[in-house]
Image (cartoon, rainbow, N blue to C red; front, side, top):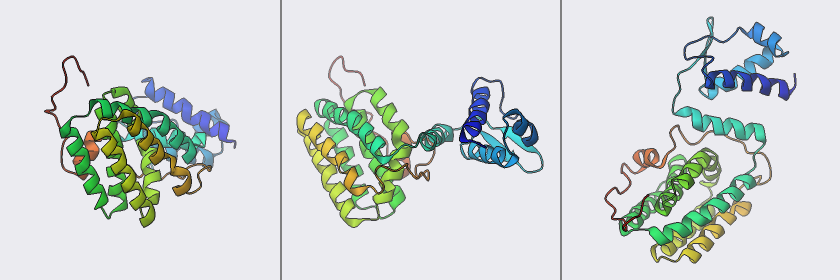
Length: 262
């Protein structure tokens, strides 16, 4: 059956779950009934249910049926991956969005950064430069960029980058085994942080644009739909990534100027 039919089924069930029409623990209609309702083959119904199970929305229990799961921290990350697959998102799309957002977070960070935050970000970079595991390295890379957003002081920017993190992590992880790319990225990271540390907003912006702009050279299949594997585990917030990778917390005793709110 058509992709439209499968999408219609997935969207209908997701809507009913989100609206509370279907509650955790409740069974979905049988595969046969779903096939009739959405004019799909049984095979197509099973494929949709499999994707929803991977997204953490339903639990397929052989011999019993398919049941709505309880909300978990995995669902936001799984949701963005599922949406990206359907939308045919490309590496170029992700990089362009990051340039638009992160160039300004870097500039803002240069105007607001405190020494404790700079020192902590340097610690993250040292750990990243010495991390041999590609998966952990990709998470440290994400933590560095999310950390800059936090220093910039706009929680919406940090939230948006956190939302993009599952897509970004897959892209970063795909290049972590290329020594030349890793060395180039390390130099670019240092240039960004040095500019932020000196309070140079314009140079911080330029350094971030230059760093992200190398994506067209280092990322494979730059204009082809992403092949997503879900590198980043659930709950991909900055604090959770830091807990997993550096066993440390973001500096909490940073003195802020009067009237400043993070």
